[in-house]
Amino acid sequence: MKKLLFVMFAMVLLASGVQAQKKTTNKPNKPNVGVDGKNANAMPVINLQDIILPPAHVGMDVPLIEALRARQTIRDIMDEELPMEIISSLLWSAYGFNRYDEQKRVAPSAVNVQEFDIYLFTNQGIYLYDALKQMLRPVVEGDHRALISAQKHFAVAPVSVVIVANYDRMAKFKETADRDFYAAVDAGYVSQNIYLFCASAHLATVACGGINRDDLAKILNLKNGKALLAHPVGLPVRR
Image (cartoon, rainbow, N blue to C red; front, side, top):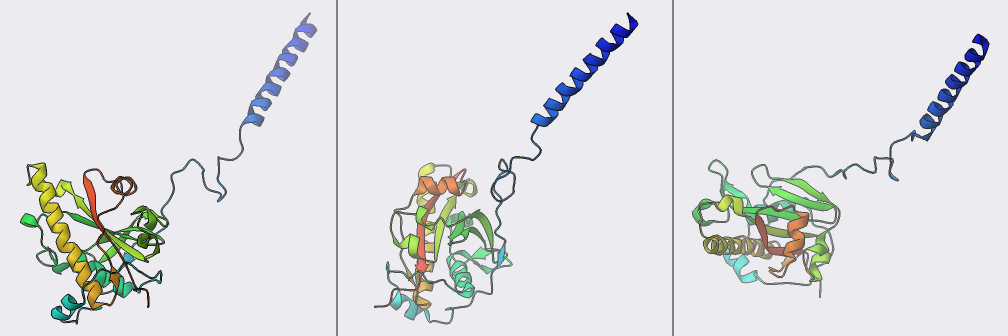
């Protein structure tokens, strides 16, 4: 009887061991990985780095009267890349600080709310312009230039500047109509600065209000703001 009980107990242990081995075998040995060897369930990583911009000075020595005479809308833009010195001066001219100690900008704003965020779209990614440190901060990786508008020059131009009103900075305006009015007026100042810089640097640009605002709000993760204007910028097509 004791021998029979011992045999039955051994059989139970053996069966338990086999079942445990099956469970272990069914477990995946590796995490779920993508083709690049990274966790396929992980959020995408932005590989772009901050870009320290060189000093903004290119085109700054052109007399104002000459820039005004040369200012024009040019839609035919080459896809040739621009030097970083040009991009730095373009962004500074649009919305940089000309009085750093006071943190006052080259473009005025109603009651000095300084409501704009300036985004630069390139073939590498989207960057936010940090005027205080004169640098570009990556926002989204990849070429999203064509998303800005259906107009073909956005997909061709090496860079595009998108002017976004951040309404969180406009709390002083209690009425929505006042906020929208002053944001639109202030965007015009920034746009004209871009035009004048492009005229002085012999670049092509066009102010465009026909942009995909809903798509831009999604990709830029805008919570309380709106893209108002966009400027594709590049060398003009040679005739």
